[in-house]
Length: 377
Image (cartoon, rainbow, N blue to C red; front, side):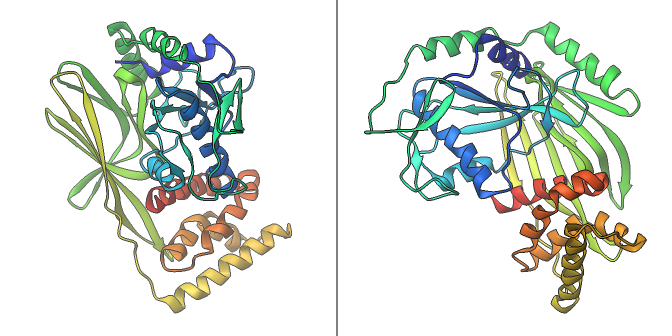
């Protein structure tokens, strides 16, 4: 069992970016250009490493300083890869906590599994045309010319050694449990559960009753053995259940208009643990968008657009408009879910303004984009 935090440290210590390893300060999957850039690197690393895993580490500066990035839900990212790439590799995106990072920041670890087939773009995305093939040359992902390139098969042994040196131990597990309980979440309730005498899941949050359900808010859930953050949210609520074989998380999102909020089930994540030391994760989308009167939404949508125009012009906002700005991201999400297709484009255009002037609204913006990624893919 690989300790993913130790794996990241070993990757960063091994060498500079190369044909099996890339690092990024952050990913931008809000735009077509950002998605195209990410998939270009996936394509290049997959083609250059047909016999071994390759990796992208997110949240690291060029000088290897670990700065962290936002928690990124990966449950649908494989669908994006499958939709754009021909012969797509299997990938995973895992959120890895580091002790010195704020609790809302993680290091992202993209693992690209070995794939013997040539991966290419089957459709045009951003400025990358259909049919494009990329490979790694040093630290760069470059277009393939003349359909010929050499693969460095020595990578297989190098990556195998790095992974072997990243194996977990009892000491790593115990240290991580103590850090989770006594340091990072010492002021809120924490729980843990051991599965199959091997796997340890820790979670922390604030419990509250919602009719017949017990929900957790401000939730942090980690699979300690592999140092993977399974769930983190400052806004959404989750329902947690478990038995000897399964650990289940059902995520709920609050949505509503005019201060009338209801909780809607979004996604169910089930982790099944086996006696042979393996586990499997399954996700199930549960979301059914709330439907509203189109005439009412039309007026609300236009009010949102007028508010966005005022922010773009740098005009001052009234106290009421400041309050509306806090609710802008979920309101535009509701509009989008009810047929206003350009609502999300308008929301993305406010990102810089919200980040600089409305920190609470910016946090909500990031949560809305996380939810939207799940729904779209």
